[in-house]
Image (cartoon, rainbow, N blue to C red; front, side, top):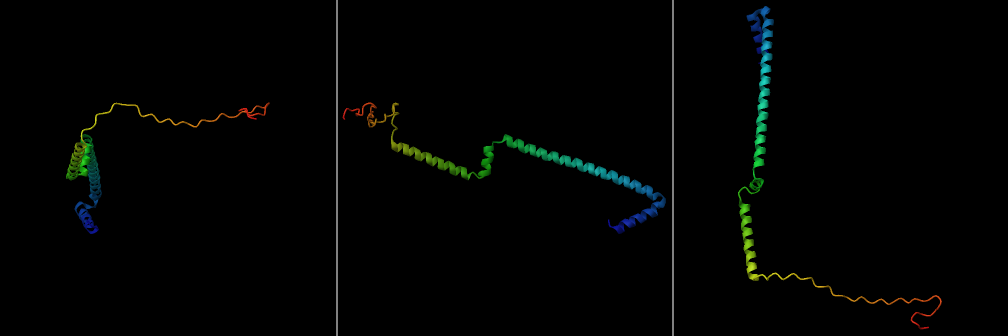
Length: 148
């Protein structure tokens, strides 16, 4: 409503109610408006609570479903939704197993396990013999080997 329309409604109220009843009517309308606003805000608050609870219920359901699901399947579905990658890996793995079997068949029978033996001993290397040091006597200036 514009100001022009509000002024027309006000003028009509003055003419219909008269100046004597107008303040009483305005108070009654104001009380009614306050009650209506209070009810509207209360209703809005309840609606907000319902929305929050519904959102929490959705979150609870999501968490519960994640908790109960096989995470490997969920990840597999996210990574390879069509299954093409899984089929390709399976065929490659089967081919590799066939090739390993062919190589084993070409190699012949496997030798039986040899009895456990001690590892070969390391060859002994003779260290050069150190000569005995010559000790000179302090009283005699002759060498130890007896040559003067």
